Length: 427
Image 1 (cartoon, rainbow, N blue to C red):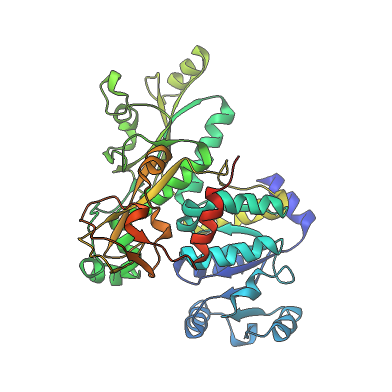
Image 2 (cartoon, helix red, strand yellow):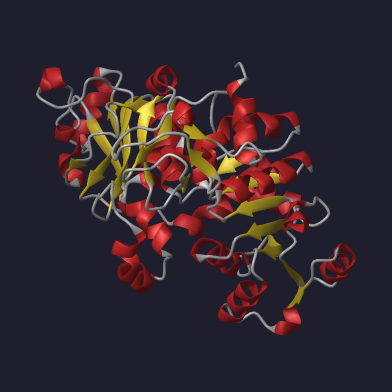
């Protein structure tokens, strides 16, 4: 971290655009205003009133920002060291204003448009939009490399926190057997917005966002990002969803041949009872390492758990921004041009032919994690490709994994176009 601080001082002020001013985007803005070496230049969202209200809530004086959608006015505000507030999302992706764009929208389609523009403008991207990453992360990473910039997920998001453990364990010489995260709420694949409306309001979330958590889609997508960054895969469709304490993780991640439930190593999974933590199950690669782990009271071996009892969401994002800009390094990103796993769509209810199908967080579908071999062989649809213009071509029964031949995608959609390009890539 001292090295990163040193490189930041050599680089100078890091200019950051933030797109999306929900809980994560707003928190990140507040933090960057207080941290040395960062300058939030642009805050962007689709609704002007929401932007203004958020800035007021963060106690940002009207003298410290200018709302404009005009580039000339934006340049003038930038030169006067004012924050540019805008609904013109294109401004946030311009190199003249930013070294790095942070996408905190949570929208796959919007995220694709922002990220593509930024990368092609040679602006680094640190994304809190794991929904987008799980769907088209591999091609975005390729486009970033072609433009000599970084496309990265964020530390603090659970995939980034898991990746920290994975890189630490690999660098230290361990064999990594399993990776995973906790889940703090119930799992109900068939949860609806109406069922969760009151709880969502109490938590300050939209019912749609909370639905994507409870129905498991968000967890599947986060683990999907880990798969694509490591080559790991789910052991079974949808993972096992084990109940455990941190102390008992090793015992609960045994192979079948050792009395457990896992068919293989190299898997991801999620656990009830360890939230907000993340973990890696590792094995020392020598007798000396194993002895020392026992000596350090890390367990009885031969496997051990490395557990991090927290992830701090956007609070850790500045580390990823600095890594991207001054070290040109990603915190987490796909390692190949094709995914290792897919979060595919499953019908929450019977869907009739001709109906428009809504996607992540809706009352119509949820996402479940499968390895890419199953997804390809059964022609399954990643949930991130389902927009509100997707149409059912036939009747689809509740609980059915949705195949491409069952639906008509919105081929005008940016994410659908990008995914088609990704499918044609070779490593």
